[in-house]
Length: 304
Image 1: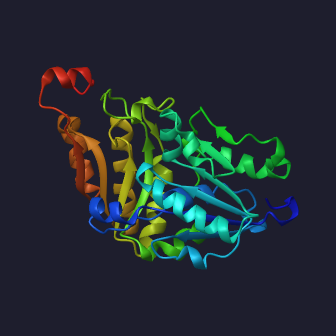
Image 2 (image 1 turned 90 degrees about the horizontal axis):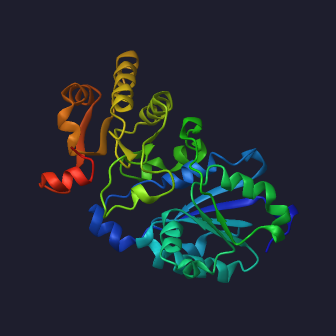
């Protein structure tokens, strides 16, 4: 473990499973949204040496020493996470290693959180408030529990923009850009774990002004296409229409346009006005969930 007076170097380590990314995403490489986001919540970032490493581009053997290594990932990344942690820990045994993200919640739900025993601290739940609190309390880390669980959802109406130094330095590596715009879904699909996250069976929407501000920055960088990450973009139809209105106004005011893509549900067909506005806002592709053609099943999931 590092001592408090040397706790200045923080490295965010992105470890997607290369094989599954290739087979599921047809080779497209998407940006590490979690790192761009989490770094934005580091208080007084000028006090720290913040760095970002993506194992798809950066060999772990060449990653320099840090006082704190921060990992995140989804379930399919587990093996790559473990392998990368082992390599870095072998080189820097005195560093502190922490992990958060969907993989920690899933393993905790399965009673298998011990699979992450090699990490010094494990974050479960939203990190926007938990991570800066951890940094503040780190000098007294002996009193910190190994598992730091946050059960209250972060209020995304207070969301910050991406950490610009990370985004601006690395966006060119990736296929377009990704922007998180909403969390949660009101539907009741039994196979889906979105709805069983704490307070996640409803939409938690980022402000339209925040979304347009991030879009504007990306467009001025030269980004041509943006994926809106949302559990269900039309979980709140009025908000979705408001977002479309803000994007249309931004396009008309600036002359800028980016191609947009998002995930939503088939009940979009019931909202022709929203469909028209999405087209005007330059949504050119939609990933639509159609779980069943049975009216009874759709009734059970609250989709009709």
